[in-house]
Image (cartoon, rainbow, N blue to C red; front, side, top):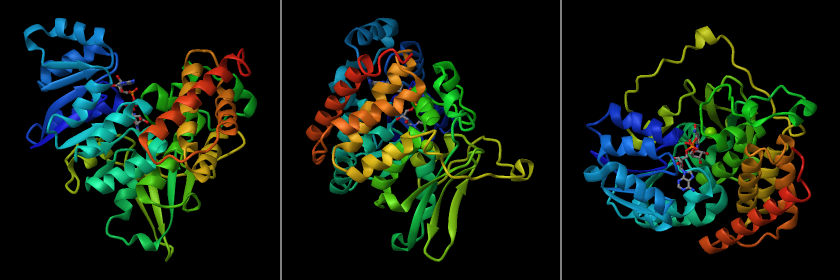
Length: 389
Ligand code: NAD
Ligand code: MG
């Protein structure tokens, strides 16, 4: 029986994780849950799972959750300290890090520092603070299991091989809903258009990141930290079917890939149970009825965000934290109809141009870079890039 603390339990990854837990009640016990604003779903999860500890960001939400649950209420905390307590203080054997955005950084780091294994969905944590996080992982000797499907595929394709024999990693990308749109058409894209993803059903922020290709950029940086390879050894192929989840090419020309239907339950379950595999009730991958799989190079002209991520990774230091923060602000502005779709990468590039690259060796340095980049991005969105939508 493995005890789990689930950070971001009401999101797409959180709900899929709880589906796996419900299908394997003999394997998992949920001791802590955290969520943002979906109190109705959180209440239902608490009534079903009986966690010992729960946290929400807002104190008033914590109070109304207590009132809703009455005698069934567990300890309910709020704010940053509440999130950190859920991550680090419950004696959980594994933390599932599935909050979206840099908000997930501090609780994830707290779990690692408490010596707890982490199933990591929250890629922004590694993008912003890769050095801080990976050195904490090494110092505390914990396991950091990737949940992102591409990184799970690479993790599986590396198993049993020597890292020295790797020529390069090849991350696959669906290309998002706009992979065939012209630059002119991209300027007219609305949030509603962008939220309809062809193959994956995900939270809003990552769905927009998939449409701009920044999701793949964040994943290149995530792969750099997880697998300790330089940017020139990490390639991206567009693969619209989303069946080959990623590949490792070795020095002898062998390419090892992991395939499956596009469903996050597979990589989530593997992170929860590695090295065992849990039986999942998913339709099998039927390659014969698919018939063909397609691959092509990404188009950096129509989708500049991927190249911006490579640029930030090569710059090093605080540049990826600035990239991530600027992207979060630009995506929020796009979703709020305050910024055009094609302007998202322009805001990020402008923030990278303006922000000095400093060392990112401590959490404080990362948080300062994140805050500075957000401020610059917000200013640019309301002035220089204002009125683009
Ligand atoms: P989501 O928006 O569906 O869920 C996010 C969760 O975090 C929710 O429970 C929300 O209440 C909570 N949350 C949001 N802001 C918060 C804050 N400030 N403080 C505390 N909690 C907060 O997102 P998702 O699609 O489940 O993605 C979660 C993470 O996993 C992201 O980092 C994403 O990039 C990554 N990821 C998701 C998928 C996917 O298929 N959804 C795949 C790979 C990686
Ligand atoms: Mg992914």
